[in-house]
Length: 250
Image (cartoon, rainbow, N blue to C red; front, side, top):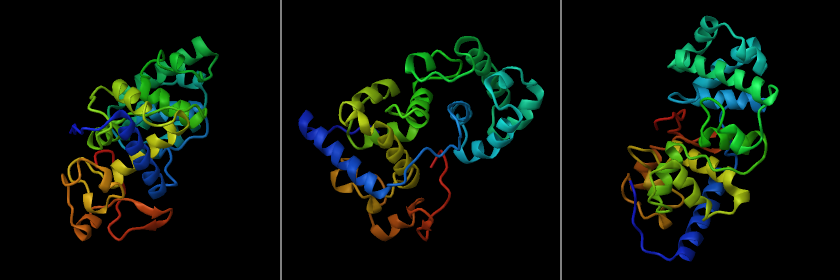
């Protein structure tokens, strides 16, 4: 949903930054929810996360990386064996093909190492800007905006942009928030989208940025009813009474 809001560029920037700061206070522990110990592991896990949940990916990657720990190992993997490991993630044949091709490209073009530059990452098989920015921001500390379905939905709901194309959303939002905050901005918007501002029934009455949101009212506005829709932690380990595991399609 795209929300038209009449405001000056300066007012929009101030409102966006105020909303970001408030969401950061709500989710100070926001982070990449894919488990990884190296840039390679994060790159592969992000590729595998398409059309499935981070929880599912985290269940299969320990086995995957124990069996094939390096890019060279992935490149030379037995396809049938890898398919069985990746089966729980869905589209396992296509994902196996992507991982093997990714391993081959890393070996042939980058000596088996994950390149730390966007222009190199997006040339890898199965890697787009979203995946590249996840890796840059979380494995290399290079600020990047990750426009997944949650981020794009919230950016439009909050009136930050009317763009639908992920690349255009990335650039539009990048103009509103300082570059140093791009990676954390991605985390807090994704956390908020999974836990509060759901696609089908957002918990408007329990939203910390409701007063600045032009879409307030598209979801449940009653505070008590909205609280029951929440799927997040107030603090690490402290669940709300209605908290549930977050899923990709929440």
